Length: 232
Length: 90
Image 1 (cartoon, each protein chain N blue to C red):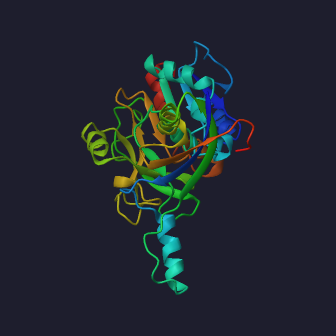
Image 2: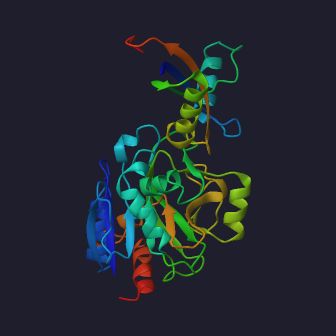
Image 3: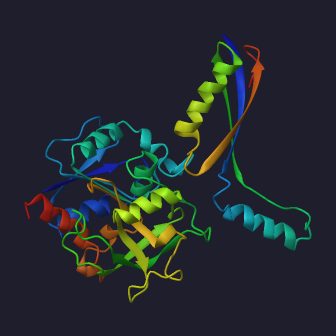
């Protein structure tokens, strides 16, 4: 199992993603430059990491969306291979249309950097298969624009097709308004595309994979993928 | 070929709560500008373009707005167009 981590100018979670996948999950991992126009054929999962690609100019993810590597990322997804967008990576995925909706400014207008709880909503996806239905994870968030928004019809489809992978909740798993850090509709923290091979999520699983840091709740996302690819 | 200057205003779609606008509105009200309402905050983009005629320029800029300059899921855009003579700084 090999991860490919795209480095955009302004990415700042790329090394964390590399460390989590290679050191903590024990997979192979390779950095990919945003100016590359193709993706090595041995890459199973592309990670679009967190950060502030292109300084968040215009809108978060709007410029990264037209980076040379993004047409190859699109092709990779069309082939049914895996794409994981974390934080700014999620924003890039919605800007590029690989996932529906958009990430608005947090309802509080503040940048929020803290640990939150997530409830695992969908365990049939390749990103969550090693988790338990309803499993509660403690994962950090660090964003100013994480307020998931889509029109009513899109939300209806996402819910009906069970494409919400993670929801913000409290320590007991209640997806309450108080547990919603940024105003996201239906406490949505992460969503899957129609085929289930693209996941975008605002929380940072790569930042909580090493037991040395006191929390390895995020590791399941990466080990699920490894299990799926079958080279565990 | 004619040259045009476009002035584009981008605002959050009406259906989306403009939290920043609301906050500024509250600030105005608390500083006694109580008659001011419906504050909305957006972006302003200026650019020049050359095209056969105004209609073609407008169509091109509209396309650019829908594709990159604005995100139609969350934003509306409004384009003002004015013809400029060659060499005139925009």
